Length: 389
Image (cartoon, rainbow, N blue to C red; front, side, top):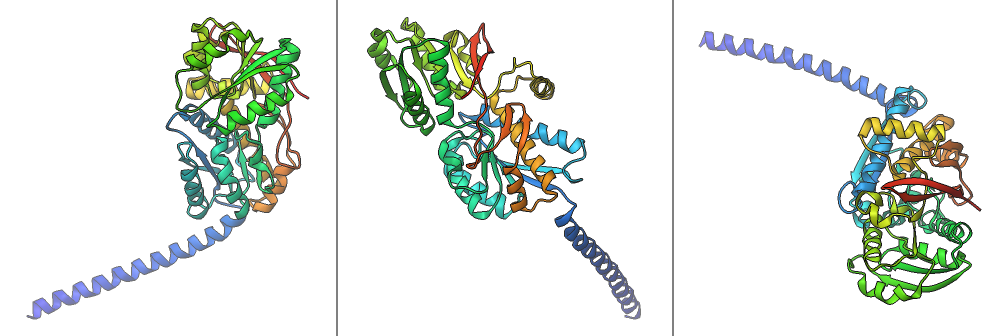
């Protein structure tokens, strides 16, 4: 019993010593964490950017490109010393291009990830639902690629580095009329897409010639032969197809199979059409945010770096994702902090050259810049010209 009692006494003393050491370490850690946290709010710790982008589903090619370019921009900024001595940190979620998922994931970014600013969402449909919530919470939001005119309307904290659908549609009409000499046009409109509807409306309003027909279809359609048979005899100068490359490519393919010879004119959603529909879209034109064949130094540097990093040519959405991060970072640098109101004000004051053109926001958080006209030639996307107001 004496031996057992002695053994228990030794064990008790040992445990007490260990507990004391553990408490001391915990106290030290807590003090360190408190000091770091206080300091981080002012000048230290990572600056947290959030992103919502579709990296799966039909729009994954776009969403992944935006993500790749954003990460490239962040790596460049961090390598150069960060923003006000702090590193940028990106938290992104795959919203699958879905509006409901987007608002839930945005709330997660705001409430759990404590982001300082949002880059995105990528498409107009998801941006339209997130923008009001970002504005209500006072979180600066710069969407790279949401072109719907309503995204920024009435918002203090919401901006975009891409041009709007009305502007793009008007520039498409201007090019068709002035550069192609088109006097008649037929429009294909995806009535289940606000993107397609808005572009069709703005093109119609700006085109000085005659619209011979405006044919409707939905996201579920993949056979356009009935529509094509209906319009084939109209002999229009151009056919305007404001939709994404996967649907526009199908329409182009079936138009070619039917022997329709009108010049095809499209929109920025055509970027990537050469991958699967190069022969079908050959000789067509589309409005876009930039061209990889643009000889400007800032463009070629971006294209080269992106290709080296990801082994592929960056599409326009990649260029816009890169520019969006650079705009947010520059605004934070000028603000000298991540204070959301100060960052918002400095985003508003943006006046800088970028891959997709010069960025300067108007009172609505929108920009007006040159629109690149891209032609599909021998399986490549080449810069034809640039148009502006």
